[in-house]
Figure 1 (cartoon, rainbow over the protein chains, first blue to last red):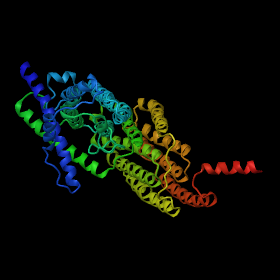
Figure 2 (figure 1 turned 135 degrees about the vertical axis):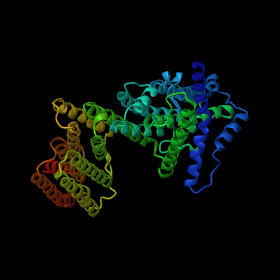
Figure 3 (figure 1 turned 60 degrees about the horizontal axis):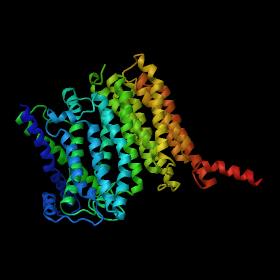
Figure 4 (figure 1 turned 30 degrees about the vertical axis):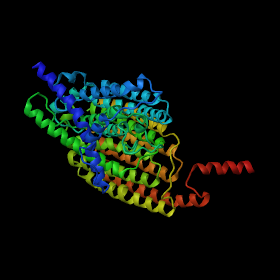
Length: 317
Length: 228
């Protein structure tokens, strides 16, 4: 039994890696359709990764060992963080490490090495991208932690699996704090995964790029790993939003039928989130970088209001 | 009693009250005049919805009338009048960004915590189901005051004043099942008259100092003193 559970945990982790490019491909296709283009196939992001892995990896002369190791560290840290988020079932041995603070820490580790690698070669763009990434993430992190604390105050745990179980095994309740935390976390997710209006994933324009500026020096398999890690991060945030705020459908056992259903439900939820993201990216324009603090202040305000409304409106009742 | 044991309508009231608080923040931080007027209209709509729900769930039929009054006056009539004023004063595209948005947000959050602390003794003496909305409405009142203190633009100050009225109305509805109808009609009439007077004042101010920035009123007198 124990062996099967660990096997399932491994399969779940592999599912993350396998499905991450699909989500990005889905969003790209939707965006193309919304812009009256036919766009590439949904599977194009897999082909891109395959192409990059087949290519030779070139390295700048001034690159150090850090530059060579960073793609692996970034990918593994992001993958580990993703694997901890319950995807189809909450009753896995990995659920014990599905603590939100651990996940935030792993993502911070990945970001740290990404920024170091960006500065390693010593090009202007790398340093600029790294400083911008740190600027955005320093503002996004407090909001993310506040959102997590808001949820944790209701479920009395920072463990994601317990939070989901709490919602699944209690009667559905309208909670103002969840609403605020959801809104805040959506803004944080947009900023952290480098989507419009903070960063545009589809451009290499010098003045605006953040993530693209950091990985400008990479090529071949290193670039593929960096891209894949970014896709994993998007999927991670998608699953976080979909499963923590509406865990309906997620399996609480390791029963094959329930697992299959959970997979279908979570794919459906992610597809809906993809539609929402594609629409918002089509409607909104990218903000100036110096407007980012206002955007993330709004996220922090929302999550703080969530925390306060939990204390004021929910506890005293 | 835990949140889950409350009836659905009362849970909805709590959610709406929380959103009223959020609209107060939105009003406080809004740089554009037209957007601020819209935020105020949304706040009025939410207050009207809370009133209607309390009327339906608590069995106070006269509150339906108050809800309709709020809807007509604060969601439709006053925002419309303000829109027309702003249009006639050619301030449609006027922007007045806050000087220190983060600091002001923190001050407003401190006011929310302060009003919670103030209402805590009330909560401990088992009152009505909606008692904890009193803290929210007190916070709306205080944020309205803060808005009148920190914003220099006359139209925004009026919006702050009106949102204070929203807060008081919310407190009355949630704590005591609304005020007597005569009082409510009187307050509604007062607000309307105040709005008309404000309109006249706007024109007077903008004619005499070519702006609705109230801070300029101070600098004019100081300059006059310097010259004399």
